[in-house]
Amino acid sequence: MARINYWACWTMRFGIHQLCRDQSTGLSTPMWRTAASTHGGSGYVDHEVVTIRCRATRLTCLSASEGADFMPHLAIVLLSGGLDSATAAAWTLRQGAKLSALTVDYGQSHAREVDAARRVATALDIPQQVIDARFFAQVATHSALTQPELHARPLDRAAEGMAAEIPVTYVPLRNTFLLTLAAAALESRALGFIENGMDPTSIEASIVIGANAIDYSGYPDCRPEYYRVAVETLRLGSKIGTAYGVRLGITTPLIEKSKADIVRLAFDLGAPIQHTWSCYGAGPAPCGRCDSCILRAKGFADADRDDPALVLARAQA
Image 1 (cartoon, one colour):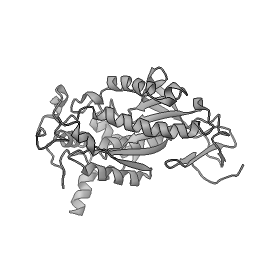
Image 2 (cartoon, one colour):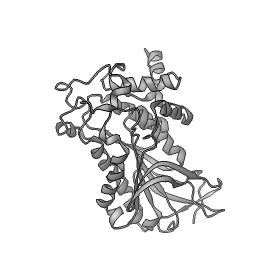
Image 3 (tube, one colour):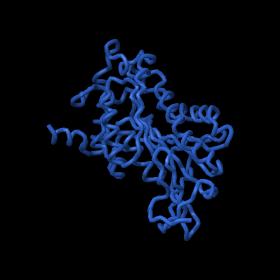
Image 4 (cartoon, helix red, strand yellow):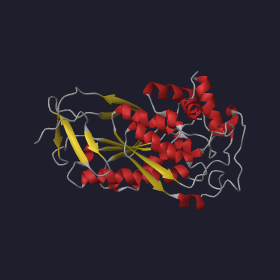
């Protein structure tokens, strides 16, 4: 068994797999364990996760079949390019998961966020796949984000009352569509391990999404009860969940945080939020009047922080 000098647990860049184990302790690092989660069958929704940390020692590379007692936590983050998804990605990396990003161009009017997602992924040094799914806008038509010429986005709404109704910026079943794409990518990664000899009970797999149900626009697919049901649907519809019993989860680390809490967390994590874009408009500068701009501004104001994206934009002007 050849030794390697990598100080990382495993490398996986869209199909290139290396599993490694701590030679002095026999423990794998990193490893996730649920601190508080909602379970349904073999699926789970994590709202808080703790990390088991092991001593940093020289690592030895294991093949999938040799690493049968190793439990990799595979994670894929839905990286939109906004404040919340960038913070969720940085948080996931801090937990020690092997993370990749999925960014979806679904025909949204504010496609600038896709470019922002690319910059965030580069800054975090995580592999990213950008999917062209612009056909979705031809299906999910009743939204100001997919058909702005037909539906005007609401402006200048009070942040305190935004969650009282579902505005026309809601995109029909968008998060259901995005979760399905992320689950397909994640399941493919897990199957690459399992069907090359790894014990499926040694694998956990999570979709990470920066959904928030505190300072938000009232979207039904951002609420905790939605994710509790969605995770079981994905498990029952997947091969890894039904044939192999893999624990498939949805992790929503920001869902119960205020926008100010998210801003503070982003700074604590060193998340590259200077590259993020939240506005529902196409730019070149944030409009400052849509729900997303208003909630973002409120978060930075309540956290008593300057928005680094605006600072960067002014410096580049």
